[in-house]
Amino acid sequence: MYHDGSETLQGETISRLAEKARAVKAYILAGSIVERADDGLYNTAVLLDPKGKIIATYRKMHLFNLMGSQETVLLKRGRDIVAVKTELGVLGLSICYDLRFPELYRKMAINKGVEVFLLIAAWPLVRLENWVELSHARANENQCYLISCDCAGFNRGNQYLGHSAIVDPHGVSIASGGIFEWIVRGEIDIAEVYK
Image: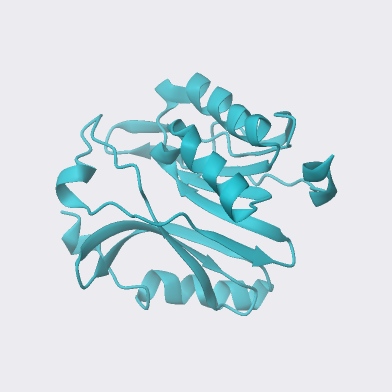
């Protein structure tokens, strides 16, 4: 199942999103996609710069095996903590279930100097309370911003929770969406990370 939908980093999904990044002159955290690599399949996030260039890739470290998912059977686990310095700040990448593991975020903040955590996810509505609490905790305990994007709507009988958000270094929501598709907008001040 995963193999049929997999693609390389040069595949159609990332190519189209690279075009969009160039067109709107913005960073895009793409994915996650099922990346087809020489050594197997990975759940991968791809960070594109405003020129459409891939500036970072992150392979999910904490694979998920509940609610019908069998990631540990179908995918390989990523091994690298990923951070990238941009003019926006130092960005750290994470995917979905990673949110439940505070050590990853601590290592990004302490060892990699991350100022803004970027999180893409597909959490179900039944986990809304955990999603909000953990997102705020990861930002607050590391005194970093956390920008999250979760799926909205339904897929194969699962309802996703939406509630994408921008959380400040004090664990307070700057902006957040609801259960449906939503554009979340807000301003961050990297200086807040150092106060």
